[in-house]
Structure formats: C-alpha cells, structure tokens
Image (cartoon, rainbow, N blue to C red; front, side, top):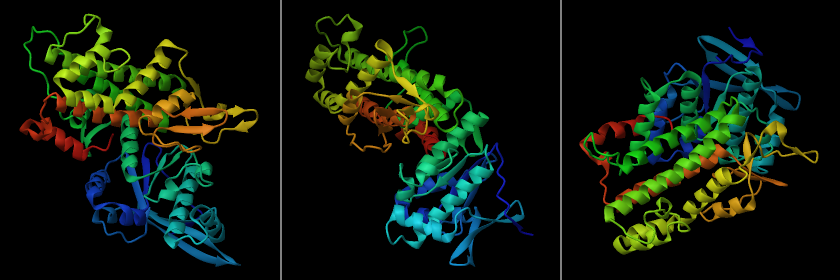
Length: 452
C-alpha cells in the first residue's frame, strides 16, 4: 500500500548513495568500466544504501539497485511531480517540493533555453535528493552523476543545496564512501567483505600508488635506511589526507583538526623530498661545498643549489625531472614557510564569513585565507585562474578574500607528489614492484578498494 507524502526514511548510520543512471550510461568511458564494477562490489555492504533513477541502464551491475520513479499528475497549467519508491518491501509516494513548470524554468537557467529532457530529469532527481536531506536531517546523501552542469559550483542550484547533499562523479563518490566507512564506523575496507587495520590499509595504499618503492634489505643491526623513512612519511601523509577528508565531509571539531593535519601534510611532503635527495646523494656518493650541512642536500634550488649541480653530472635525466616539478617543489616550501616560520594560515568557517555585511557564498567548509603570492605559486604548477569557482586546487575568490580549501588542495598535491616520487625512483633505477609476483596483493588492493 502506498502512503502519499511519505519521504524515504534513511538510516542515520548508513550513507545513502543515489545514482543518476542515464549520465552513467552515456558518459562513463569504456576504459573506466572497471571502476563501476569496483563501485558495485559494495552494493551489499551494510553501512551503505543505494538507489537509482528508473532509466533502463545497460549495466547489469546497476540493475540490482532499487529504482525510484517519477510520475507527473496534471494540475491546472502544470504538473505535480510524484516520486515513487519501494524500500524494504514498502511502497511510498510523495510530492516533490517543485512542480514541473518550476523545474523547467530552473533547467532553462542552468542548461540553456532548450534543455534536454534527460537534463531536466536529472535536475528533478537532484531536487528529490535535496528534499530527502531536509526530511532526514542527520543523514548524508551522495548524488552520483556525470552531468557536468550539475557538478559545477556556484550555480543557482548548487548554492541552495542542503549541506548534507554531495553532488559528485562516480570516482569521488567512492572516496566519500571510504571516508564515511573509516570516520563513522572505523571500517578500513580492502575489499567489500574484507577489513583491515589503519596501518595495513595505508601501507597497501602507499605501495599501490608508488610501485617503484622497494623495501630496502638490511640486517637487523644495521641503521635504518632513508627510504624506509620515505615510506613511513608517505603512509602518514595519506593518513593525514584522509583526516582532512573526514573534516570536509563529516566535520567534528574541524577548526582544530583541519590546520593540524594540513600543517602535518606540508611538513611530511618536504620530508619526502628530503628522503629522495638523501638517497640520491648516497647512491652517487656526491660531494659538494658544505655537504655536511643537512639542509644543503635538498631538491629545493634555493637550499640545494650545489647538490643539484653535482646530481646533474651523474644523472641528467633525474635533474630534468626535478626541474620539471620545480614550481611544485617551490609551492610546498612556500607553504611550509607560512605554516611553520611565519604567521600561519587564517582559518574561516561558513558561518563566520561575513565581511562588510556581504556573505562569502563560495565558502562551504572550513578554509584558509591565502595571499596572491600563494595563488601565483599554484599557477606555476599549471593552475588556471577560475574566479568564483572552487577548482581542483580548492581555490575560490570572494572579495576581499582568496580561499583555499585544505582537503581539495592537499588531494591535488598528493596526486602530484605520487607522480613525482614514483618517477624519481624510476630514474634512480628501482623496478616496478607491482610487476613482480610479490606485488599481486597490492594490485588486488588497487582494484578493489574505494578510497583515494
């Protein structure tokens, strides 16, 4: 029996993930099909709940997910939109807060004068999920879509969505699932039915991301190898990144934990650079002026000029690699200067962002205010200026402020650091561990986990 006006009741201890079936069907690249299969492995996991639009998907894995349907009922010059669903063998039906004419008008504003029917349909489902957030105040909902317009920030729609509704693509949705499992349940999934402890999870994550790292062999009584510390720092860095993700999606005392983990992330990054520099110095037995001073062995040209000159003589390709990432290295050391040796970063929260009676609408989570100098350093790494839009670096503008969102910023940094480090080890002559028989377990982890 259907109960009109009854919203779907979501369990607070579960994360609800709603899938825009049409956009997945039309825009998921064939090369990314394995990611959808990885996503589908978690459909039966108890801490997640899934729903999808009624579009007849071509993917068998999505067909097992509960379908929600739209039904339009004519009233005067427009249609009411009813949402039908079946959950736990109980059918429900409720009226959307927007009628068809209102949805069409909003669609024309964000998609253009003649929006496609499927775009209007996706927008309708987004509004439905927003309604569910209003009814289930303590629940989080992830709306999974490849509709680029709905994924954009600072549109009329995105500015008015509930803070507990996350509109993301398939890949980011899996990161949120992982962060939810870790922060809300203490579950570290290696696979949908296989849990481990944090230390092992981050070790697997590191080994699968930097496959050129090979565990150094040494006798028990020998000194610790510098690359052992490289591995430790990298695993700590991945953990600190997740801790920033916890505070972005599921905040708890974020005003304390965000700067703590951000500063730690920056320090660990410079520490990783130092490990690579020391390994290079020891491998090639480099000698240069003042080489007994630790800070002179550095990838940062301002500190390690003589070291880098000697390195170029023995491995010119490695020196070219460092030059290619010199702006990235400069950015990290600039941030370290701010965080450790100067005034640090000013953190602001959404509810505190009033300046001269104007509300900074681009801010949706705890963020740092930064100067144009930091933005210029980011530009040097390939960042393109996009005022009033949080981009992949987490930068947004709202005069008189420039905001940096720590989690998004560090996530981009981590991707660059992984690329830089693995190629660095490659140029030092280290083989790909994942291609050896011992690397099979790490390869399986890479294909089955949902986290970053």
